[in-house]
Structure formats: structure tokens, C-alpha cells
Image: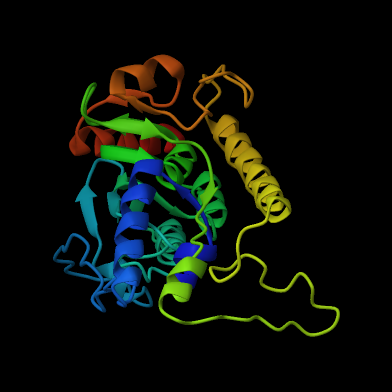
Length: 294
């Protein structure tokens, strides 16, 4: 878990990152594990399914669905920080992608709504999930109750439409990528420990991004370059599905600078399409499905 927090690249809102960083560092200083991770994943919305799909996964059969004119609309909650395999107390990008692919093969389903509320997550797996959403045969609509920051917005941006709950209390954005480095050398020194990493001949670049060696200016520049490439991919994916956005990657303080925007601002700058509640998002998904079938 610690290696994921420190070494992984995250499309994550900075305020959430800073809070988690402070908690992890405080626990490390107290000689504890960085986080206490529950072994129980949160249960998605439950629904009584009189005739579950034969051959469908148990997780898919337990997801909520709404009966509409076009058929059933799947309601898929994407709440909290996202990792690829869901080991941060939530379902992961692999789970979501699998269920959306099942939805596309399910004749009883006409569309899906992603119920998004979270700070983003680990970059690994998000591009894959976004492609599954973007190329879905059936319409997928994003619904943002509270916030869809960073990786959550990457996911939302690949949907046919984005519905935000409020003009003022819902927000989207934080388009950007970061990585966290914890220099624990002083901590180990104060504990009377000296850590030495011995690399084999020819392995000079092995595991240079770690917490027991200071971050050199050269390595910092290298990591920043890698993050910049990922940011470029993030931006290109957003622009491919959000043509109303007029900002470019280099627009000063623009939508790609990492800022968050409330519902009113998001509507004006092309980051979202309309304001409504979950029922409105389900209606939009149903309407898109009916138009597609016409």
C-alpha cells in the first residue's frame, strides 16, 4: 500500500492529496502503517433482481438499475479515490470497466449512468476505463453529485453527457497529474537507522524514486517530464469528447491548469452540459438510448 501512495502517479485533486499526505506522514512518524485499510469493500446500491442475468458476474447483478422507456438503465456508483484493482476501500477501474462491458452485452439494458463523487485516483487503469466508456455501444451519462476531480473528471469527460447536481455546490475539474515523494532519510536518521541501497552493476536507474534516498534535481525533472506526458494524454482525451472547451493546454489559469469549477462555471466553459439530479441523468441516458434506437 505504501509503495502505491509514494511511488504511483495520481490524477488526484491536490487538496485531497495534501490531506492524505499529512495523515500518512504522521502515522509513519508514529511507527504505524500509513493507512488502516478495511478489507470490506463498500456495497453498491442494492436492487432486487427477479431474473438475474445468467452468466453475469455477481457484482454486476447487484448493481442498481432503473426501468425506463428504452429499457433498464444501469446506475454505477464511482465514489471515493479510485485505484486499478480497488484496494483503496472502493471498487477499482477494472471492476467498473468489466461491468460496463457486461452492460453492453445485456439485452435488458439500454444505457448507464455513472454516479460520480470523488477526488480522482491512480493514473493506472483510468485511461483504459475511459476508453471503455468512450466506445460503449450504449449511451453512458455522468452524474456529479458533489465533485468529480482529476481522474473522476477524466472518466466523466468520456461520457455522452455530464449532469451536475448544483450550480454552486457541485464541482468538476482539477485536470492534472501528480506524484508524491516522501524523503524519510531524516526520520530514519533520528531513529538511529542508516539505509543503504545496493544496486547491481548496470542497474544504476533501478528504483531511484524511493523514500530512503533524497530526490535529486535530475530525478525530479525526469518525473516531472513523465507526468507532463500523462497530462497531455489527459487533456487530449478530455478535448476529444468535450468540443465546447476552447482552452488549450497552455492557456494561463485555464481549465487545464488544475482548477476546480462549480456547476455554473462548468456549464459556461464546456466542462459540463446541464444541471439536474440523479433522476434527470437517468432520463437523459434513456432519451439518448431512444434516439439511438430510432
